[in-house]
Image 1 (cartoon, rainbow, N blue to C red):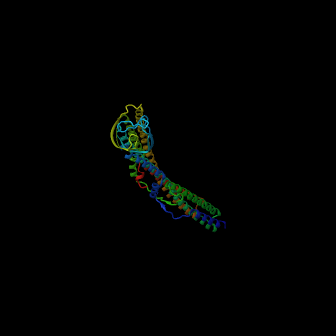
Image 2: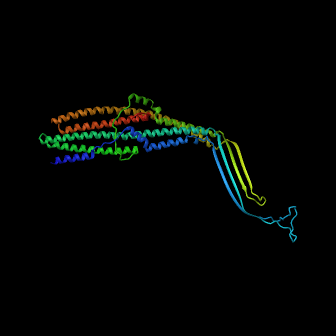
Image 3: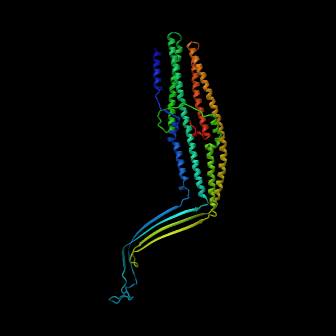
Length: 463
């Protein structure tokens, strides 16, 4: 009676934790598309490229003139009293006026109230560097090369993110296939338990076979539960890369195809020319060379042009000697040229040139080192991929052998020629062979992707 109640309870637990719902399949192409659109690391890299593109534009080149406009307005009001000590009034003919007492009539004070004056001015000045020793010419070339370098860095970020994406994606695919294998193992154990129960009821086997089957069924159920939990965790990791809702559920594509061997050989032969690290090293050399040439501009003169156009309007208030308002309206225009030659700046320019030469030499040495490392990495990745692909092929053969062995063992168990322990061992061997094959398959595909990344072809092929 206990075993009849125990099995339904186990099955209810299994169905509750391992029930499958129809889920939308996230294809590899859709995963790449979502990553390119949403991944935050790629977004930051694209912003850096956009900044570099702005920097290399003509607006940041120094080849355009600078134009400055100025304008001003001034209002002034004065209340004044003018005194004329020692001065006397006259009759207009040079004769001093005499008062009744025979004294000269002094000139009275003059009061000026609310004397208003306005002044307005505007000026446009244009300055242009006609020649600066070719400094800005090489600076513009350097900025263009920095844009190229920024694009290569964005490409590197993109490639690294794609590798990260498929490391998680293929892990989810591997676990999904393992779940299928574990569920089949569970079903086989369930069938074995049913046979053991029937055989025990008819007295063909002892109770030990039934108990062994029940224990194995519990273990298989636990394995499926654990693997499903691992899949949920892995899907959350995948949603992090996709910058998506952490609890979003979907299935992944477990189909794997490998690139043609001849095509892969061709990629490897051209890997050094297309490797992103090598391209970055060449770009850095160009940047340092342009920096050196720009630094040498300190030894040449600078020729500049300047021009201006100005307007001034003065409305002057009346004064003691000019009783009426005076207006002064003036316009002026000017052109000029300057030549500046810094014959000696205390040694700062010479030091800058020397340091630029040293940095260029260091970049040359670094390029040589990177070239050796890239050759090594491509050779290692190629060997690793070929080895993993061979392991996958051997694991496929191993699954075929383990499957045949389990089928034969199952038939012999039905005939009573082997024990349940021996059947279980054959079942475990098949389970291990199948899960090892799954692991080998995705390890080989990841090794292929890493080889494609090193040869600069990861973004040019269909994964």
